[in-house]
Length: 104
Image 1 (cartoon, rainbow, N blue to C red):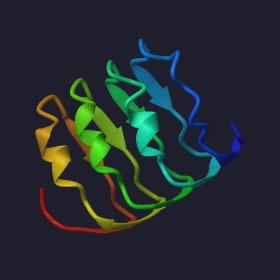
Image 2 (cartoon, rainbow, N blue to C red):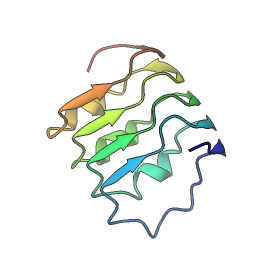
Image 3 (cartoon, one colour):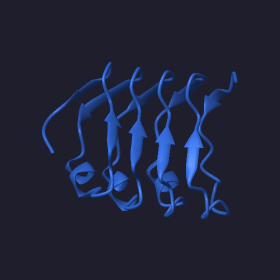
């Protein structure tokens, strides 16, 4: 696909979504923290290979069902949220090729 622009924040009616792959597009901007609370059942979230930037929100910790998180090859900066450590079902975490640092 070739989506461009920012990620929409009006996703409130997608509460049953389990797998979301928006990888390999030309998306820009940040991952809105309000967006993450819209997907309580999300098991896999792939947003790699875009032009996303900003910091990763601490709200990532509310995705308690998450097993796969792929956000590599973007322009994220700052610390890796320690809340990722609360994702006890997480099996795959890929955040390489960003400007992130820290421990969790």
